[in-house]
Image 1: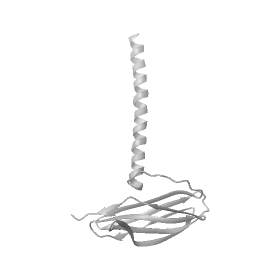
Image 2: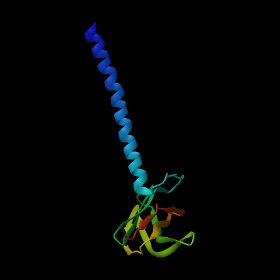
Image 3: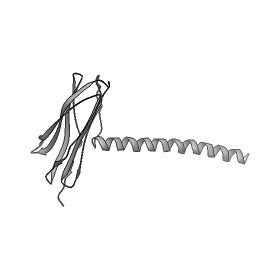
Image 4: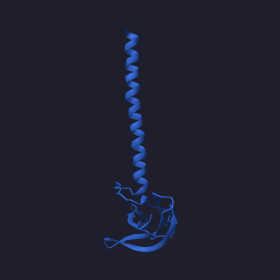
Length: 146
């Protein structure tokens, strides 16, 4: 009888701890996904032609690395648009420079730019996929002077 109780406790413990482990992994994956994209909560709109728009920005020293990945729902869809590097100045976001993007099915664009210390930057993209236009921004990246 005591052996059955130990077996039952072991089984219940495995189920409880097993499910907690799965949820922990999901939470970590979800948190990482949010941090990589915008450092904010993501609200995904309903698009008929666009599957993914993922702007991102990082830095190393004074060099900024804005990038964007766009994926259409169709592999033959035409993609065109502009990726902007913006800085925060006097209470609003201002375009610093921009790059065109074009492709079919999916597009990845990555650039580098020398930034200024103590300035906040972000990546913005305006894209048209088979006639459907959308806009997205990344989280902010600040170059700090030490």
